[in-house]
Amino acid sequence: MTHRIVPADPFKIHVPEEELQDLRRRLQRTRFPNEPLGNEHWAYGTSLPYMEQLVGVWRDDFDWRKQEEALNRFPQYRATLTDADGEDHEIHFIYECGSGENPVPLILTHGWPSTYREFLDVVDPLAHPEKYGRQGPAFDIIVPSLIGYGFSSKPRIPIGPAAIADLWHRLMTEVLGYDKYAAQAGDWGSFVTSRLALQHGESLLGIHLTMLPLRPHLKHASQPPVSEEEGRWIKEMQNWWRQEEGYRSIQSTKPMALAFALMDSPAGLAGWLADKYYRLGDTDKTDTTEGMIARFPFDTILTQLSIYWFTGTINSANTLYKAGPAEGSASLKAGEKVTVPTAYSEYPIDTLPLTPRSWAERSYNIVRWRIMKKGGHFAAMEEPALFADDVRDAFREMGL
Image (cartoon, rainbow, N blue to C red):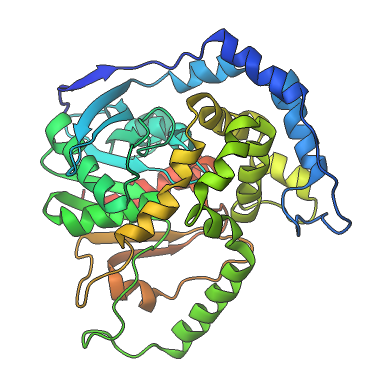
């Protein structure tokens, strides 16, 4: 079941050589900060020894052209769609048609501080399972760059997940011609995918999430009292966020105050984003530098950082943290719930408490529940084989 791309143009990434040279010059002039004693485990933020290695590799050894070739190995397009407020958005996406006669259309949506590259290693296994000794289903894989991220356009007026969900639905139906499709996501992508299920549930075959962003209206009569387990989890989550929400507080209130530093300094960009990979990735927290490198090899994380740098999208990406809450896209209305069949897989993060299933079932029609043994917030990039098998199994169990 392949579909002709209608209002979209083929796209290939090519960064001009002068931009590569400018990046190297900026990295050569990096001024490193002092590091207070006691930051071996990143208690104050991104560690100096790690950053010295990262910047050195980015400056001297990182081969962007090689990574550019890898990014271009799947067909890519850009389609222009107009939102409800009349603003045009160029949406960049991978489109890899799956094997066999009836592959399942599947849209994969990344989050922050990630890019569409997060899914690059699972596109082929999900589209062509037979090449990896796996049974179907096979999928037509669509991987868009979020609005304001990577090779999609920067919005003039920042938009949130609910508005993006409407654009994603039009991408799948009007541009690609699918009547029904499935969706998978984590982080901000899980907000978008949850809104897809709420706003366009009639077109969703099922969803698979690695984060559960929707919050129930607890005072509605349909909601039972908060259980003891849920109460403990809520307190643990609040304690966790008190330690980790500094970045979110800035980006959700005054993102422009941060933007000038991140746009002007590649080392500044790397330091800001690397902290989140360390916190949210399933890294070895005993040997922190080697643990980070093992979990996120330099070529992998530097490709993510380079996409932000070359496209100049860090500020437009960060402003999603202001646009999302303003839109209220995480809050369910009284009695509202996702009725689309939902599979949830929770990947371990070092300090994040496990979600009670009862809490998830307040907001979602949970049909499959998995607690994974390894992998973190960037599951498709950290454990691509495990992730691809899990997603495929989930949709197979849904009857797709």
